[in-house]
Length: 207
Image (cartoon, rainbow, N blue to C red; front, side, top):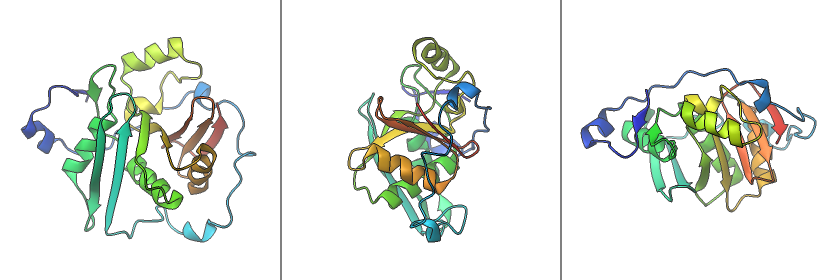
């Protein structure tokens, strides 16, 4: 369910559930180019990956974000004592919302946990810069008309994808960490200075 970013009551903010958005299929236009060869498995990190999430045992998980389009910042603990914190998830939904359409939806929890793993593995001390999080159907249609390689049914439209960079992590290292996790799709866009991460099947490409 889409909601407005600019007209949210406190009561609604606190009651909004953390429903995981189910995924739309990614079309081939989002998975073009080099598969796998460039993104080798990092054997030095291999011992860390013994479970679905390498940091599932952390008692608390915190993240900081900066939306490069809106200037909004967020520094929060979203998981503590074995539970996700609804209010913190709400805040993540907002900062990853579609600023063009003034809408947001629930961001996939597995995607949030993947961002946490990436942040921790990369040893970054800076916020994750959000270039594109949720996209409304209207925004996705606009981007398809004006931007190369945007999928018709992008994972962005279901809250299962994000485009990011981090100021104290090189883009190539960010790509390497994300691909080593093998948790979903990883697109490397050096000319546009972002790494795309989604919760589809594991695959890699260069845009």
